[in-house]
Length: 116
Length: 110
Image (cartoon, rainbow over all chains, first blue to last red; front, side, top):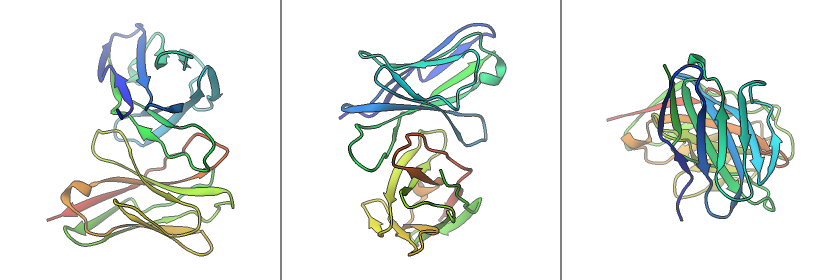
């Protein structure tokens, strides 16, 4: 059973370009979470999605950032018009279908975005 | 979600038990205690979770006090590869997101 996959692992963008980060959850997982980690800082929650639904986007910046988890295909975190402050590691996690009382999350290896 | 308090750093000798404390004094009845760790630059790794009973798996043991206001993660025989940042979080079963604090940086020394 493959783990959570993220691609690309490293992404370099110039200021003003768009960044698209992809996350394929573990097989059988229908909950996806995105986190951002700035250098030397902890993980910050961004958004929680289920298939075709955004459940909680309280950690998403109001502008330039969006996320989706379509019925088919990976979850996408999209950053428009990137700025240097967007440089960070972006981690995706997935968890099993609700029905249990616990939500252990399994993390991917992350995408390291560098904005030049 | 309840907030947690952890010491910023701890050292442990290789082969000895590492005991990592966590305070969560405002935890409510339906919140679980979860532990994750992040080895340098890698994605966080789930370790263990519990509600009120002590738990053990192949990685670690989790001891939760009777009043549930604190817990301890125990790595019974720490190795150099256990050097990582350890995060204790509490999570409402109805909420998906996890709020990670600053964690404890555990350094296992030879």
